[in-house]
Length: 114
Image 1 (cartoon, helix red, strand yellow):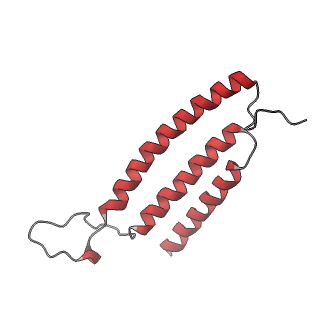
Image 2 (spheres, one colour):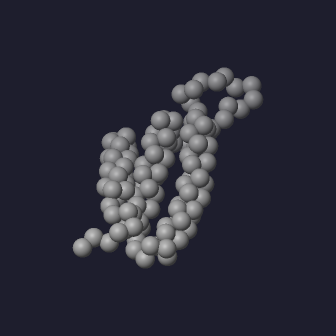
Image 3 (spheres, helix red, strand yellow):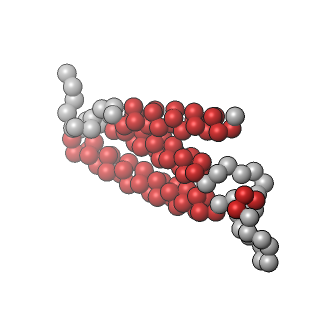
């Protein structure tokens, strides 16, 4: 049941992110990129197996049974992706504000539709 909820959440986030990414306003594009990055982060978490109350590392001298431990690599990748997406969003907002100041519109193509 948990896997179905996670898959549905990933699908909704990815679909909403792509839909917003194709919108003509720059703020909608920024929100769409953020939603898409959240979907990818959840997908990376799901690839590392969903384990509750499992240690991410093997204690010294213990047998390394992969089914008993959580995989720390997806956690590290998602943490890195969160930091990179935050920096990307900040940079994108600065560039979009500068483009709005130069063009006078917040449309992606720089032209207001009539």
